[in-house]
Length: 245
Ligand SMILES: NC(=O)c1ccc[n+]([C@@H]2O[C@H](COP(=O)([O-])OP(=O)(O)OC[C@H]3O[C@@H](n4cnc5c(N)ncnc54)[C@H](O)[C@@H]3O)[C@@H](O)[C@H]2O)c1
Image (cartoon, rainbow, N blue to C red; front, side, top):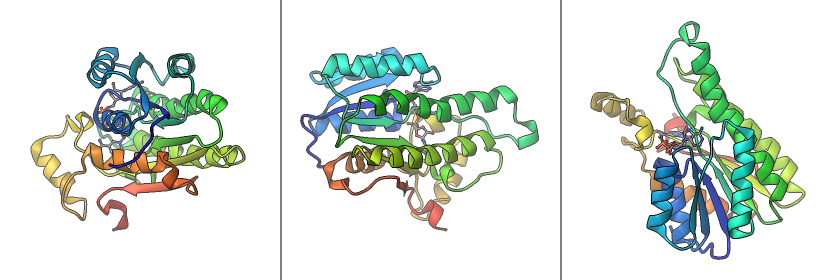
């Protein structure tokens, strides 16, 4: 990754682990100030401490609108602006056929993966100025379905739709909003999968392997940077060819 984002202030939700952590590290390396916002304040704080100057951590629960507002307030208070936001925090659940999907599991996934992106977009777009950029982390499941994953698939399709509306509304003020659709990426999110299952999952990608968090972060940094100044409202698969099949 080779972007110069010095002078910019970036906010990453779910920034303490996996894809979010790779984004936070990427922004910091590119010279941006970065706020690592996560439900796990210890892990977020440890990463901010490791990165040092120009990094700060705050606790957020993206399923709580007040917490999302407080996260944006913290960013402005700490670094004076919000130029880049990556709405990345998300969860998955065990696969279950739709009739057996528990209502509480449906609600939990929708409240974090979909409500959470809306609750973040609201205060972010309210304070962002011309030239700002938002990247929402969807999934290949934002473009295609998968048996047993009703809530996850619905939440990620919802994120892609929200991205389009936010892009249309932001266009007038030159605030760009895009979504990325990762294939399966080697992160703790996949920790429930057995090695055998991971092998099978890797084989679903035409390139024959899982992706790495840095391979998502480099696409996020590109979309956040001035190099992507004419790109808004887009959904970018970053998936080793998964949805091209
Ligand atoms: N790993 C994959 O294969 C994959 C594929 C496609 C999309 N994604 C998406 O990428 C995003 C990041 O996933 P990851 O694989 O890096 O996961 P991860 O589990 O490694 O990290 C997720 C982070 O989000 C935080 N988090 C969870 N709930 C939260 C909440 N309510 N509020 C704030 N933070 C919360 C966790 O504490 C954790 O630090 C998710 O939206 C996920 O759906 C992941």
